[in-house]
Structure formats: structure tokens, C-alpha cells
Length: 396
Image 1 (cartoon, rainbow, N blue to C red):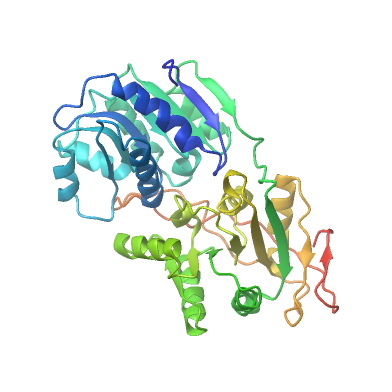
Image 2: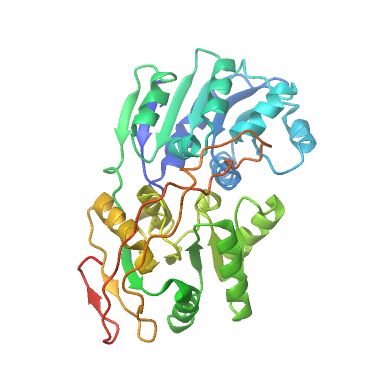
């Protein structure tokens, strides 16, 4: 990056990619002219508000002794304060695509001074349907710029996007695609669909988990399980696209400072959650898309730290589990919990129709539209034993 060459990098979460692009970017900006009114010199695009805020925190941490200004803009909050903060110009702007387009259309930000463009988690931006916003932004940026694209994988859509925006890029792959971190212990607890919340409560109490990130497939499911945990005396909060930015910020801060013991999140809302030494991640529901499993459990075991990823799997989710194991090349150990052994041995798959979740025209808020919907994958049955909790390496 210091040489000014375009870069296309595949890197999983927790590999230090933010520092990888931020530090050389700051070094470059220190030797150039300051930004003029409403100008920006480096632009970082992210798919979600949480990730944007996290990247800004990193940028400010790394540049705390440098004469550089950095800001963040995203939807879901009032636009006028953002317009005021951009008026004097900023060296580094972290933004979600929709809000940035709104600001540009209002004349609040100018692009002619952009030297560097970073697309962070570009695969997720495509999943959320931001491709049209990204293309509109690209058409307004200077031709002479450095562009860096970061993605979990080099999928066909990512390569197609890169062809139109990168010039002879250096390609870097930090880890093999869809590989889970070796520092993360993975466990499957088979159970009935209707007993997942009770099993989650049991595990938190019996194992004395003090900080747990729980993934729910839907916003309604996240709210429901958070309410159930609170009723059981376990302080929990839910974050998803329907929550206000203030509520999401408070929930995340509470989770970081320990006042919230359990954070229940949807896949999109969890992007940008960066908790040092997060010990436990629980998949209350398996994701509809196997690749999302890798993203989820990447919230723990970051930077070589140990972590534990637990999946509560019902008979209806058996094929989803097999898809995950096929993707990662790992057979996940099954451990039945006494008192929660599954009674449903075979069940038809849940109806998860509705597509992969592309973004449709409506208000911009830094979250993809209809982003929680995923393509259905069938599920088949799991076997059951009536013995004490045991571990077995076989597939369901």
C-alpha cells in the first residue's frame, strides 16, 4: 500500500486487516496537503454502522499523535450534525454508502481530493445490495487514486466488482477461504427447536458464562430470546437493523463494559463488533448461508486468542449443519446435554424462502434492505442418544 499499488485482499475477521490498511494510509496522508473545505482525502466504505464506528475508533487510536482529522457518517441518525463536522474537511472519512451519497448530493462533501479508497468487507456490501450505490460513488471519485478491496473470499461477484475498480491489483490471501480459526473450539449441542432458549439459559448459568454473543437468524428471534433471558435474570440486549442507533450503541457499550451479559444479534448487526478476548459465541439458529458461520464464529478467537463457538442444532437444521461442515472441511463434535436430549429425530426443513436478501429501494440507514433474509438450504434429521452428555465426532 505504501507504494501506491491497488490491493485485493481476502482476509477473515480478526486478522488485523484494519491496521494493515490504516497504518500505511496514515503514513501517506501525513506527507500531503491538508483537506480543504468539505474535502476528504481517504475514504473507507463499510457495510454497517457498527463496523464504520469500529473502524473510526481504530483510525483515531492509530492517529492520536498525528495532525489528521477523521470522521464517520452513517444512516439512522440526523444528517445535519454530520454536515457540520464535514464542513472544514477531513483527512479520513469512514462511511456507509447510502449516507455518503446523500451527503454528496446535498453538497456537504467533495470527492476531488480523494487519494485512497478502501472497501472493507466488500462481500457483505454486495450481499446487502449496495452494489448500485458503490458504482455511483465510484463514478464520482477521481480516476487517479489508490483502491484497496477487502473481502472474506474471492468470489465471482467480488472479482467482477474488482475488475471495474482496481488496476493491476496485488492479490493477497491471508488464510484459505472459509477456514475457521484454529484457536476456536467448536461444539454442536443437538436439541429440539422449542427448547433452544431454555438450553441457552442452562448453559450460561451452569458454565457461568459472563460474556456471550448469541446469533439469531431473525430480528424477531433476537428480541424474543433477549426478553426470555432477561425474564430469567440474565441481563441481555438485542441489536439489529430495526433498533435505533442509540439503542444499538448502548447495547454494545453495555456488552463491552460488562453491564450486559448476553448480546443477541443478527448477522448484519454483528458486523463491527470487536470485543477483545470474547470467550463465547452461540449460534441459537444456524445461518441460512454456510459462509456466515465462519463470519459468526470469527467474533471469538481473534488475534490468536482462544474462544468457544457453540451451535444449538435442531433436526430441522441438519442439512444446514452438513453444509457448514462441507464448507469448512471439519466434522463438528456433537455433545448432548442431559435433560435437553432431542426428542424430534426427523423433521421437514423450516420455510426460509425469500431469497438471499438483496437491497431494495427505500430509506438509507447504513443497513442493507431485507438483509436478514437468506436463501433456504434444506435440513434433515439428527441422531439421538439417551445417555449422559457425550462427545462424538460423527455427523448428524
